[in-house]
Image (cartoon, rainbow, N blue to C red; front, side):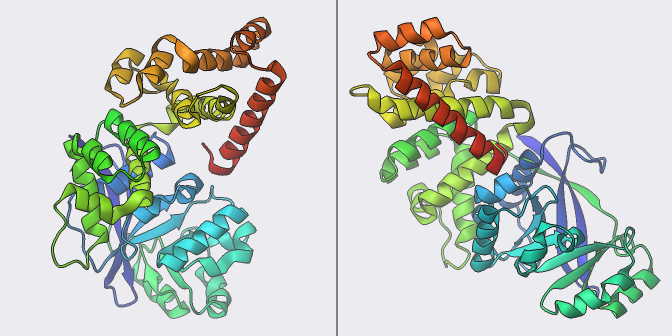
Length: 402
């Protein structure tokens, strides 16, 4: 069990009734910015507050920051629409794919929040996506926003860093409808205990969902092996099924209710919560490259399963990512024996293909030719597949900040 710390600062309406709260991840009782990356912080906030069984006020909204990666991974869909406000961080770029994703969130009923910079950058053409705009009283003159607020009557403007009563009265008079600052209440650092599922259980769940997406019994069995993961799945199902008269208590019922896409999002969220992306992002990129290359090369080899080849490539750097011996990790994963042999000793067909990938990575061209000859592969076709995989990985990294 781990203790998750977070800063909670209320947001009030013009009648000083609480409208919601800002939730920000913290590493301890001091209200300081954490040293972990944004995606890990966001996932831990969501896991500890929405998936730990804690009772949240149904009448309040909870503002959580999301990076472009988390938004494109559809992580917010794991959380009830009515409670969650998606705060779009400054690092998010107004790309066509992200615009399309935000439109999907709005259609689903999510509230979307941004800061005042959206009026002066590439988001300016997409202001219709934002329900709430935050303006800092400490950095900007609220008088300058009167005209803008009148031009966007359907958008709520939040005055941030309201320190005194006269600042509140002025902002209210000018047209702001939401307020936050020390005048109302200082941020409080709170904590929730959260039991995280093991990474091995999460990876096993990924394997089964991708390999046997329609086998509900097998998916339920894998999830049920880890008490914490089972608890998260059942809790998530009950949160999303608030309208049901009877709570969901049966694991299989929870799996069926969530469905494959929601399960994938939930497990992605929990994996992010367990790993520090800042420390292993370059390893993840390398693993994705190997996975794509092996998947695309597999059809050149008779009898090789592209999906199994993908898993071997994706898991080939797990020992470095998790700082644990590969023997310990592979022994716990629900992989075929041939895939396990590939990861442990680079033996068998999958192992030879993984070794070929490593030789290309290190520009060992003599060995590349030798392995291609042994596997009866055309070297030119193999190198072309690697270049294609590298391009796809670079595109994915640029788009989703892998």
